[in-house]
Amino acid sequence: MTNQTAQDVRTNASRGLRALPAVGALLIMGVAIYARQAALQPAAELAQPKPAAKDGTAPAHTAKAVAAADKFLKSVDATLRAKAVFEFQSDKRARWSNLPITFVPRNGVRMGELSKEQREAAMDLVASVTSKEGYRKILDIIAGDDYLAAKGGGKGGKGGKGGKGLGFGFDNFFLAIFGTPSATDPWLVQFGGHHLAVNITVVGKDFVLTPTLTCAQPSSFTKDGKTIRPLGEEHDLAYKLMASLDEKQRAQAILKTRTSDLLLGPGKDGKEIAPDGLKGSEMNAKQQALLIDLAGAWVNIVQEDSAKDRMADIKANVKDTYFAWSGPTEAGSAAYFRVQGPTVVIEYAPQNGTDHIHTIVRDLGNDYGKKLVKR
Image 1 (spheres, one colour):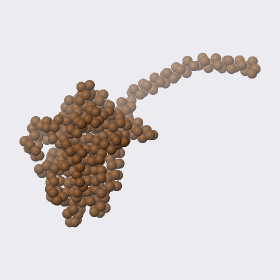
Image 2 (spheres, rainbow, N blue to C red):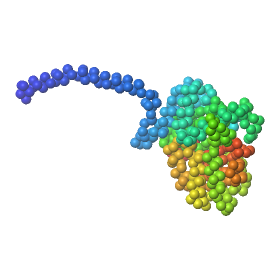
Image 3 (cartoon, one colour):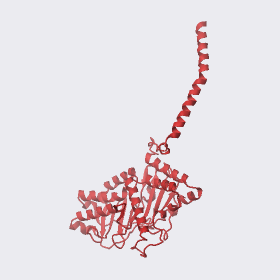
């Protein structure tokens, strides 16, 4: 190396050292500008769920549910949080019912205890584990209970004293979380009150709907000038399927013993019943499609990705799925019906007429995500 070259190297090095503070200042300015821009973004935008991880452990819909649960828990104080959270395997998770809360106390935080912002966070959590269609059904059932409360209670069913003071209306719905919201470990969202009990277990990418109870009283009412039928799709599809059956098929579908109430309703966790009625393999393609759609009226309550997987399973097992009926077959009448396949049992049971309906959906092998939790 010549003396001139060495001198050039020393000169350039000296210039580089003098430039370092300026570069550092530019970096600090850049970080500050980024932080200021991030602070100006809406919180909802910053909280958007991450795309699914490459290993599949944190899909977007699971991340969204976890974020919604965390947001709700952070919105309440320690006293309300203690009411809301239970151990995942707690025996209390079976404490759900179709009865008014004065008859069967519910788990969790009462909506009437929450501020407007806390209620919104609570319902955002419910929305995060259900489909748009399912969340709308939940709101319609709540609206029916508000209607019932405004009318001073309802008649029908056991008791039948008009229902005054029984705790109807949205204020008397409850939200509970069993387990710690997680993208991998199992946890459960339980939401309900009179005539509603939603139990959705989250295990990674899978959301398990069962057991979930959806009811309606009244079965039809008017809100904001619109007719609301919370269980209208369920009713209409069942009668359409029944009307499509020929005489031989009807004879197979109609149960020999009269059934009028839920066999697998509240308090019946772990109970099993034998399949009965008309088997899917005895139906034509159009009738099988109606049977699948009928099951979908319940299955599609859960978040869309999980509902899609469940519907694919039901479609694959349609030939081994039974349709059973008890009561009049004329559209608009009060009749019990049941859909039962290898992984789903659905019951629809009118209570003393057509204006008071109880329904349940279960997966006898996977209620509360039992199969997935064992993995």
